[in-house]
Structure formats: structure tokens, C-alpha cells
Length: 368
Image (cartoon, rainbow, N blue to C red; front, side):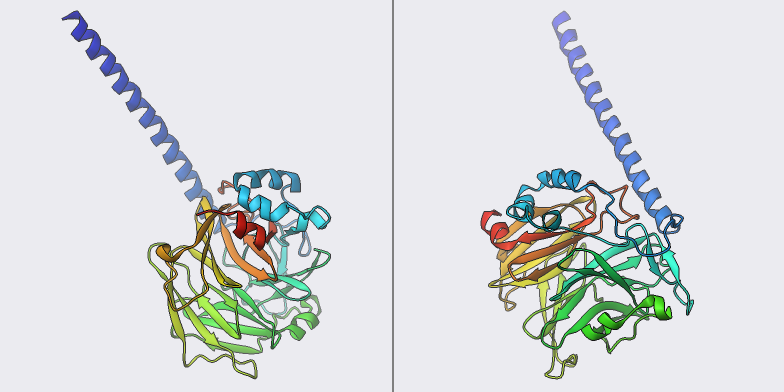
């Protein structure tokens, strides 16, 4: 009888211990979730006070601390840093405007305003520049494009856009020298273009006017325009979804550089997609899952097949809040939104830099 009571007491204590452990993690989980939700709600309404008078390009975290943080994703760290010791900051680029961006309050013409909540989204690479799109997290200011010198890694200027759209994608047509930008207008997906010459000549401080678009198209064959890329004289435009398969539309570019929107081809892609890029015989897609690690998925370069898990060749773990990717030669440039004010204090990892990854290293050393 005594032995039975002892066994019951041990069993009861064990169950109590498990119960209290469960309660502890439940309380912690509720606390963390509440913090994230409250902070997210706050940063969507309130911006920090501006202490700068123009767009600033300054690191939020030291390069050494971000290099150490990359140890959590060793394949990315190897492709980003190996063999780049002679390059500026190992080939990385500080994202401008994270603390202050000169733009204007949407709807207020001929004015200038400082936004402290710009959130980077899109990335493109030209012969001379890196172009990064960003939107105002509080939905107050016009969206912008940051122009970064490809060689010196220094911020050149901001391009103020005509709307406050999410601008999730940007692409560069290397043949016609047009820069294409994802937008939404009146609830309708839209893609707009500016010429490279326009970008070079534009100066917001001279006129306090947004840049004019050289081309603009409403896209009725797609639900949203979340991201895009240029490949083989066509734009590939898709949209982000977290709970169902996304769609990637192909829009041909005509000989004169205009977009053919009457006939499109569509393909199904996996969920959570933030960007797409083409590299030799591969299609690369970037994916983000909130605070969880992001991923790069690699598929055969054949849009005749569905870009789904069963056709995937590789899946590479990335830091969280991965945004657009862009291929330039044998390098893959990758952008994160995790260092933006709206996400800086709720992300598990924060990257205030664009990384340049050697694709030969990344795809050779990676495993599924």
C-alpha cells in the first residue's frame, strides 16, 4: 500500500511539474505575442521624431555583429563573406533611410518631410547602381527609391515616387534601360516605369516634386503586384500569399520597350514568396515567414512546370524577413526589412545591410 502511494505521489508531482512548465511557456508565449502585436500596432500609427534634415545612410548595427549573426545561417555566411575581404565591408551595402528619409507627406505638393519609418522592399541592380524601394510604415509619406553607388557603396540620392504604394518589387530592363516598379492604384495592380536617364537627372531637392513615370499600366490579370523581375526581355510579376499558392505572370516587352499586357502566361509558385530571380538553368525564389527564418528555394529553369515543393532542387535557410533578391552576373543580392523601425524590435534577426552572395558557392555547398 505504501509503495502504491509513493508511486502515486511521484506521478502526481511529475504531472504538476509538466503542468507548471506548460503554464510558464504559455504565459511567456502570450506575453511575447502581445508585445509584438502592441508594438506593431504602435509603429503603424506613430513615427519617431526626426533628428536629421535629409536621408541618412548609417549603420544601425556594427558589421562585426551582423557577421557573427550570419553564423546562424552558415551557407549564407560562406557565400556572402568568403573571398570578399578586399571589398568594401565584404561586399555588403548599408541600406539608406532606415532612420531618416527625405520625401513628402502624401498629397502635400511642393513640400519636403522626413520619414522615420521607411521599410525596404524591392531591390534591383544596374551597371552603376543598387536601387532599393521603400514604403512608409505609417502610410503617411510617399514611397521612395534609394540610389546607391555600386562601386563606392555610398548613398547617392532618393527618388520620390508619386504614391505611397508598398512598392514590393523593382526591376531593370538592361536592353531598353527602363526601371520597372510594382505599385497598386485605386485597388488595381499596376506597374510603372522610369528611364535610367530620368533617374540620373532627377533631384527631389530642386523641385520637391515626385518623379514622373515614363510608362504606366494597370494589370487586370493578377490580384496584386507584390514583386517582379526582368528576364529574357520580359517582366515576371507575382504576388505574396501566406496560405495558398501564388501566381507568377509573364509580360513580354516589345521592341520599343513598352509592355505587352494583352497576352500573359501564368505559373503557380509556392507560398510566402517575396521575390524571384533567374540564374543560368535555375529559378530562385525568396520566401519570408514572419519572425521565423526565411528561405531561398531553387527550381529548374522551366516555367512549363509548377514551382512547387515536389519540383524544388534546393532549399536554403536565410535570416528572417527576407525580401527581394536580384541576380547580377554570378552574384545574388539579397535585401531584408528586419532593420526597419516597424520590425527592428520584434525580429529575431536584424540586417541593415544588403548582402552579395556568390551563387557558385551558395548553390554548390547547399543541400536540401
